[in-house]
Length: 424
RNA sequence: GGAGAGGUGGGUGAGUGGCUGAAACCAGCUCCCUGCUAAGGAGCCAUACGCAUUGCGCGUAUCGAGGGUUCGAAUCCCUCCCUCUCCGCCA
Image (cartoon, rainbow, N blue to C red; front, side):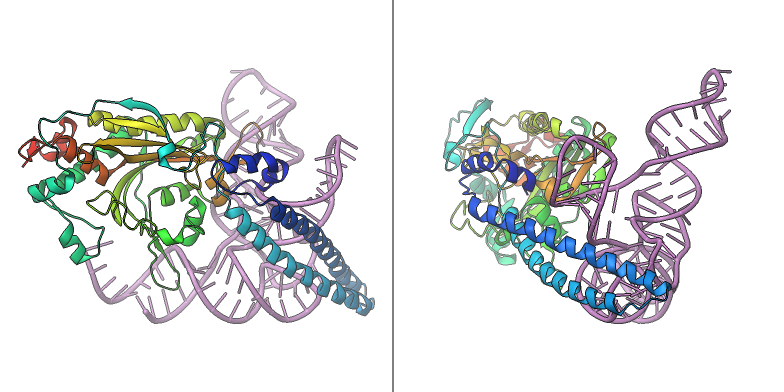
C-alpha cells in the first residue's frame, strides 16, 4: 500500500513512476474519492462530537434533577444524521482502500522501462559456462537415467507439475537445502525460522498476494479459509506485522526453508517439461527487516548472500536488474539471479531478491520506533531466494553431468551426502 | 471432541452504565538530589485518522473481533476468534 499522504501530495510524480510498471494511475477517481472522503469524515466526526457532548450533559442534568426530555429529542436527530453519514463514509472508505490496495509499489528511479524479461538489464556475470565434449542432457533425461526423478508417478499421485525424487537425487535435494541454511546462519548472520505452511488471508494481504493474485494460490476449504504459502516470504515477513519494533531489534535477518505452493494459473504451457515450474517446490528464503535508510544497502547484501550459494556450488550465473514490466507488484527494485542450465543452453531464474521498501510494512502495520523522532515509522522489508532448491538441483544435475550420465557431487555438498562423490 | 475459566496500555493488574483513553504498581524516558553506586523526589510515557498549524493544540476512533441494547458501553446482550486448566484422543 502506498502512503495515502504521499499519493495526495506527489500525485504527478507517483503516476509518472507507476507508468514504468505499466500501471495507469487513475487520478480523477482518486481525487474524487479523496475529496468526498475528507468532507464526509469531517461531517461524521463533528456530528459524533456533538452527540457525545449532549450525552454527557444528559448525565449531568439527570444528576441535577433537571428535565432531560429536550436533550433526548436533540440527540435523536443527531443520531439519525450521524448514522447516515457513517454508513456513507464506510462505503467510501472501503472503496478508497480497495483503490489504494490495488496500486503496485512505486519502482525505484533506477528501474528501467521495459515490457518483459527480455528488457531486463544484465549487471554482472560470474563463472564460465562449461564446454561439453558431448551433447549435454537436460535434468529430465538425467533424472530418469539415474532413477531419481519421476514425473509420471507424481502425476498419478497428485497432478501434473509435481515430482517424485528418490535415492541420491532426493538426498542431493535435501543436501542443497541444508547447505544453504547453514551457510546463511553460520556465515551471513541470519536467524533460522520455522514457519506455518498455511496462512490466513490477512497475512497474504500483508505481503501483497491478496487481493489481486488469489488465482495463483491454493486455498483450503473451510469456514476460516487458509492458503498454502506461495513463498516463505509471506509468513516470514508477517512475523513483524502489527508490531512496533525497538531500534535495537533491527536489522532482523531471517532464513527459512519451506515448501512453496503455486497454482500458476496463468502459466499453462510454460515450462511444462521437468521440474522448472512446479505446483510444489522447496525454497530457502532470506528476509530482512530494516530501518528505511538501510534498505538499499540491504538489497545488495541480500543479493550477495544468494550469489554466494551459487559461487560455492561453482555454478555460472548472471545478475539481472528487472525492468518495469517484469518487476513484481510489491517490489521497488528487484535483482534476479539466473543460473546457467546446459540442458537448455540458457540462463534461468533461480533467485529473486526484492526491496519492497515500506510497501508491505504499511499493509501489515510493521513499524519501528525511530529514536531520532521517537515516533513509530514503517520499517522496510526485503526478501530473496537463497535459493530455490528445486532449480538448484536442476542446475547441479545439468552442470555436473558426465558423459556417461552420472553426476559429480559438488565439493561443498559432499559432507551432506555422506561423502558421496558421484551419483550414478 | 467434552467441561470450565479468561481476553484491558510495553508488563502485572483495577475497573458491572456517564466524572475511565482507562486507577495503581513495574519497566522505560527527562529533570532534581547525589563523590560513585544504591536509595530518594518531580514530571513524562498507547496507536490511527482527521482538522488547525506560529505555538500550547482540537476532534474522532480503539479495553480480542463483529453486531445489538441505551441519550450514553471496557462495563449489559448475541455471534465469532483466541488463550489457559481438566478429561479424551494423538505424532
